Length: 143
Length: 143
DNA sequence: CATGCACCTTCCCATCATGTCAAGGTCAAG
DNA sequence: CTTGACCTTGACATGATGGGAAGGTGCATG
Image (cartoon, rainbow over all chains, first blue to last red; front, top):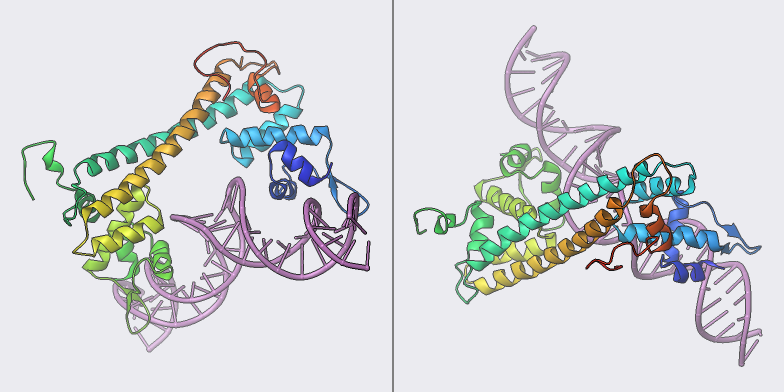
């Protein structure tokens, strides 16, 4: 099985397969006499493992650890669980950041006329750091 | 005001100020006789604008548009609102992706013993694409 | 004045995961 | 033998940022 077929079968592009080999995430593939890389079922399984891990947002470094654990028959599931837990925390932190941005933007956007006039609380906020924020909270201070 | 002071005052690193100048996001700064960049209040305002935009997750390309609108006194607020709306959609899409990853990982993690034994549904899932059993028929079918 | 330290300048390289492009070799079919 | 699809390596780009080297500048203090 050459790299193109392995790519199709595993869902990892040929480019990335070569890249993973170059950075040592996967072992060097076998070669035909003419230099083509060859892949077997075990390689395919590894590539699919990597792809599923990427789909779950794991970094290459984390996948390196997961692969090592996967291939270690005497692993402790606690190690895997810890890596997953740390990853969940990272993802959750990113989510919270995005959530905050979205809420701020929605707030600003909801107060923007969105018409032909230039007056715009979104730009106000970007320019001054505080839009007409008194509009919702406290006593009105029209700007 | 030199670049270091401008950086401190605006919250944009000197490194990034130079970068923004290089890519044409901001105009070329004035220079002293000896080549030091100089910045005035207007430049500071622009830098702070950029920083607040980055804090809200806008890309450089989007900030380029926002800056143009900001400096266009005849702008229509609808244009700003549209950019913000598109950005909200992008951020929301990312959030949904993260949410899905987190839910899958939490599901897998909750079924992992996390002890000394090697048996681990997380690795199972990464290896085979489906956790060993349809242990739970929840609203969270295989994604 | 001279020395030193903090700051400035430009330029190059690294990140992270992925893509694009180019120049050339290989294979199978017509 | 030619054609076209595939493979090889290598270089470069993305987006936003950081790090560092090598050398010039500004200012304060001895």
